[in-house]
Image 1 (tube, rainbow, N blue to C red):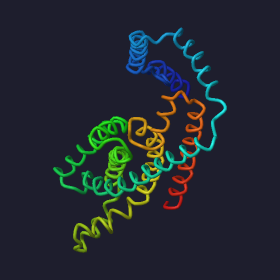
Image 2: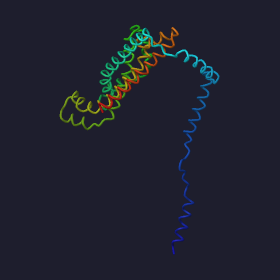
Image 3: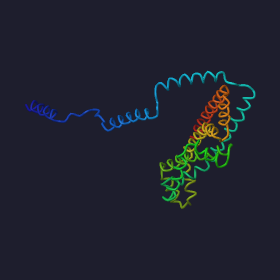
Image 4: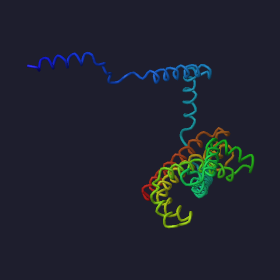
Length: 275
């Protein structure tokens, strides 16, 4: 006879319990998004971003594109294209190889679970310095230092490779398992053997993928650094723009797209090969 009494108590308890909301509103996030939207609107007015300018830009862009077709595949232009693309490929490959060789020890030095704190923080500060500037800005600095040509572009892309690869190597080392290192150290191995036998086998497969991606990135950036005097196809592209040779500009752009796509295929093959 106690069942109805128990049911009544359960109903009263359910009414007295606070109602839970399945998806409570996140007011800090909403306020943050509202502030961000207001700032975007304010910054747009400061930067003179208007719909009228956008419409005018579409008209000018259509006229510019019409002057680019058809692309120019004449023999003299293809000769210039071949010279510029060959130099860009050489710049990208040399910068990637040197960047890979230098970034591995720098990344190991920046790993806080492997290097002593003074060395690790010094290496991290150097990596942050390399990452703080865009390759184009670095290329301008090297052009002012060593002059126009491929050397400035190679040095700029080496700096970019060091900033990217060294950071990823340091993070990979900090995320690896410490048990193989402890086993090698327990055997009385020196530090170099600890790195060779305990660290590199865990890091190298991911490092190969990072290096393949950096090669793909350097292929794209080699055109950018060439625009500011770093050699390669970028210099040819800038000259074509200055001469209003827009049909040849399209030819260069198509060649850059093709090279980047081939680089993407090669980098993907390298990642699958060393996984």
